Length: 315
Ligand SMILES: Nc1ncnc2c1ncn2[C@@H]1O[C@H](COP(=O)(O)OP(=O)(O)OP(=O)(O)O)[C@@H](O)[C@H]1O
Ligand SMILES: N[C@@H](CCO)C(=O)O
Image 1 (cartoon, rainbow, N blue to C red):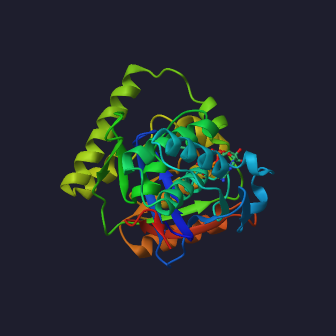
Image 2: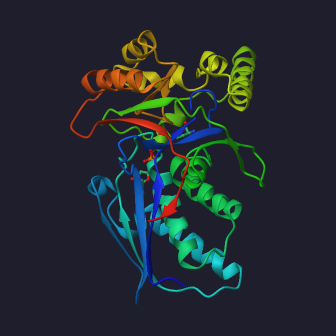
Image 3: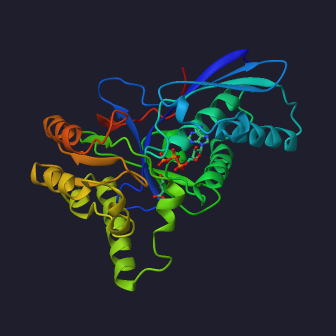
C-alpha cells in the first residue's frame, strides 16, 4: 500500500453534440498543459481535505461540501462492503478546472479522487465498479446520473454509454488527425440549471434525427469516414435551448463553420464550446477568434487539443 500518491484526471467534452448524456471525449491540450484536476492521498491521523489551484477559491466552502469528500466516503463504504480495512487519509485537491464550465469539472475531481484512492489501496475495484461509483457521485451534484464526463475522464478517448450496468461504456475510435479548439468563456453555467431548461419530452421527428445522427457518427468513427462524421455532428436535443445561456454562441459557430471547422457545439452544459477541425491551422484560427470574441472575463481560456488517449493516471 502506497504512503502518498497523486492522480490526475483530464477535462472532458460531454455530449459531443450528437450524443446527449451518452457520448463523451477526453481532452489533451497540444501544448502539453495538464488540463484537469489532481488529487493527492496520504495516510493521516484524521480525515482532512485541503485545496489549491487556479479555481480553488470558487469551490463551495467547507470540506463536507466538496465532492472529493463525498467520493472519499463513498469509496470507504464500498471497502467496508467488501470486508476490506479502511484507513484514515488526508486528501489534497488541486482544482485546475473552472466550476460550471462544461469541461467536466466535478467529474474530474471525482474521478481523480476515486482513481487515487483505488491506486492507494492497490486496486480493490475494477474499472466498471469504479465508474459506477463515480456516476453516482456525479449524479448527486448535477441532478441526474450521467457518465459522459466521468467515463472519458477515467478511460481517456471517446466513450459511448451503453445504458447497461456492465459494461457501462464502450470505447469509440477517434479521428486521430482532428484538432479540437475549446474555449471557456469565463462565466459559470450550472449543469443542474442547464438540464432544467430542457423539455421533458421531444417530438418524434427530433427523436428520429437524434438516433440517425448518433448512429451515423458512431458508424463513421468505426469506419473512419470523416466526411460522414462531420456531416452529422449536430445537437438537436440541448443546443436549441441552451444556446440562449451563451452570449456570442451563434456568431462563434458561424465563424468556425465558415472557416473550415467540421463541427461546432457546446461542451457538456456549457459555457465552453468546441470546434472540431481537420487540421491544426484551422483549430488555431478558430481558437484565436474565440479568444477575442467568446471570452467574457479574465477567467476564460482557449486551448487547441487532441482527444486525450491516456485518461486518468498516477503522476
Ligand atoms: N471538487 C469540486 N469540483 C467542482 N464542483 C464541485 C466540487 N465540489 C463541490 N462542487 C459543487 O458541485 C457543483 C457542480 O456543479 P456543476 O455540475 O454545474 O459543475 P461542474 O461539474 O463543474 O460543471 P461541468 O460538468 O459543466 O464542468 C457546484 O455547485 C460546485 O460548487
Ligand atoms: N450530459 C450532461 C453533461 C454535463 O456536463 C449535460 O449535458 O447535461
